[in-house]
Length: 113
Image (cartoon, rainbow, N blue to C red):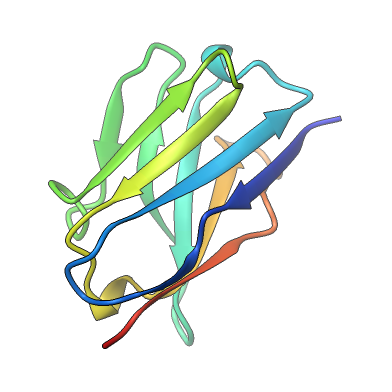
């Protein structure tokens, strides 16, 4: 059974950095396409980053140049490195096995001074 568990969220000030983790079981991440999504209060869930099974990446325009998606095949874990955080990045962040109903439980990121 596929399980995805996010961690690493928290409260940071604008301009600071944070790294989210998504630990996977039941799948081999290096063979899978994966996504990071986020959902802010009152807004629709949006995809912010994608990594293909081949390692290609793409990003939403709102995070391009600030966020980096990656994975550690040995740890079977995916990451989202977030830099230069802004208050508008505040949301619950989720990892997802692309094009499936397998989602993590989410981790809260709050950017506030």
